[in-house]
Amino acid sequence: MFPYMAWIWILFSYGIAGTLVHLFYSRHLKNPSIPRKQVHYILVAYNHENQIEWYLRALMWYSCLSAQSLRITILDEGSQDDTLAIIERMKYANRLNLTVIGRTGIQDEHDMIRRSVPDEGEQLKFIDLRVPHEAAKIPYVQA
Image (cartoon, rainbow, N blue to C red; front, side):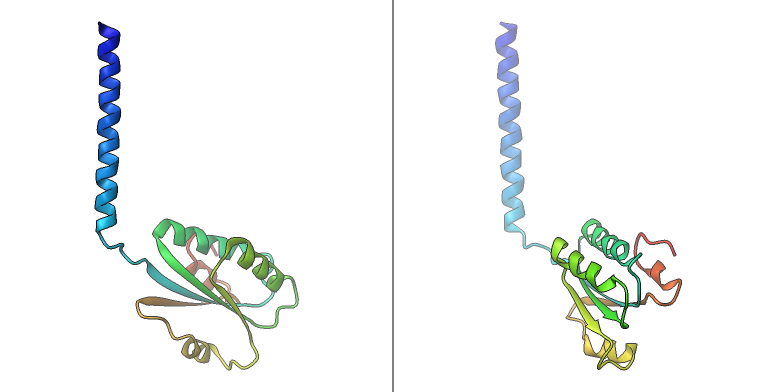
């Protein structure tokens, strides 16, 4: 008799668990989803082939862990190393919302900020990687 009672309790437990999963899922579908916070990072780079991949990965990890939607614009100052190639590989391998702009046609960072007007609810963060301790503004990066 004991084995039959154990099987009944096991089936009962699975039934209750399945019912709870369906109940919570239906409540989740009824509630409108909360929009993700949007953050736009503008990075100024010049010959940063040794660091740019880590910076982009740190931003990706942070956006995943903090449930933020991420948009990245990289302002290239005429890099002569593999910085642009690394950025392009990261863009296509990870499907980042990433834009690369050359220095031509942009006068200074104020002009860059004016040209990239943040969307409604979007937070804008400007980081000049040419300045040694500016990279510390990127989450998970120690400068």
